[in-house]
Image (cartoon, rainbow, N blue to C red):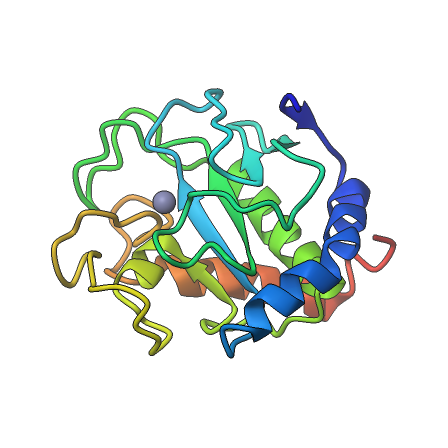
Length: 194
Ligand SMILES: [Zn+2]
């Protein structure tokens, strides 16, 4: 199917529809469902179908499939029982002090927090590092699992998506920033209507 824009209600509905296949795939690996947060290393309005959900520079949300249990090749050796979300950004990012000409926008961070909150609600997930991870954290196995050799910022630095959320932020602060914002929405009940 083609890529299409969706509302938060639709995100929740699609996550509910995929609840059992996602959970059974995750539990066959002895873990809970995971939500992985990426950046595309592209431009703000360039959408790729490697991720279930993409968020463009203005905070609009798109899906590349109506089946969130579809296997995507987003997060090396971690794709079963997971949903991948990508911020469309970070082309030519060179380090945590220089995220290039297309850094993550505030609208993208706000939408990401909302999408993570809605997915976590739909899938009954605690919003913590064991269930909601950046690709940087997943790459270095920060959840204590070892599905692969580390390849993140602490090792080969092959992938470092959202190591920081904003240019110049402290190393490894990206995941806590995203989870903190998502937990803020959850705690405030701001997305209850979804
Ligand atoms: Zn990634």
